[in-house]
Length: 113
Length: 112
Image 1: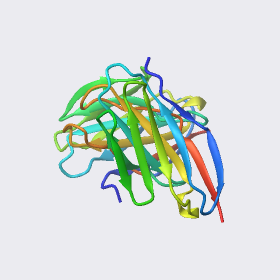
Image 2: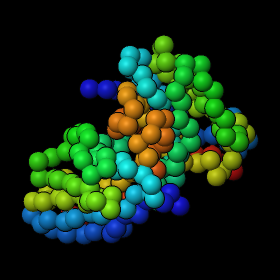
Image 3: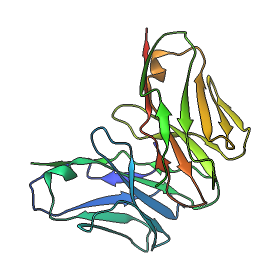
């Protein structure tokens, strides 16, 4: 158990809809990262938050947004969903200190019908 | 755009064989190289964080080496067991507290 909790584990919805994925980092970790894994793709970095503030942005679509709350949990919002958004979405956390690994949650599998 | 390449893409070995695979990354602006093990239906699990040129790290039968000057790292598994079957990911980091750039992984299958 990595200590990172993601909910829900599975999500099935239709095109055009909006969903929210939730992540609770490991106790004490200040950084939260979101990644997307699509078929035949590696883990693609979406966005990072550190202690409530956006720290880095990757290949995140404008239809996607995220935030980190004062209790350090994070939410990834995906809107106007398209078939191509079907993927496994991972959240990871780290303390933010030097040379520390990121610890991953079990992921949310999103299926768009 | 940072490029992290892993080879081979997949590998089948017999139980008891030793094996190794490669991660190539940019040799400039190096901060750290991470190795993860990712079993099917589970989340990626951190194996090593490597930071210095010439670093060697070991965890049981798994070890890794790092060459930052030429931009590669090797992961070795000695005496492979079926439970070693997983995808092994490497990830490059070019500064502290920044996102990891992942390779696509090497999928290892160990046949009993």
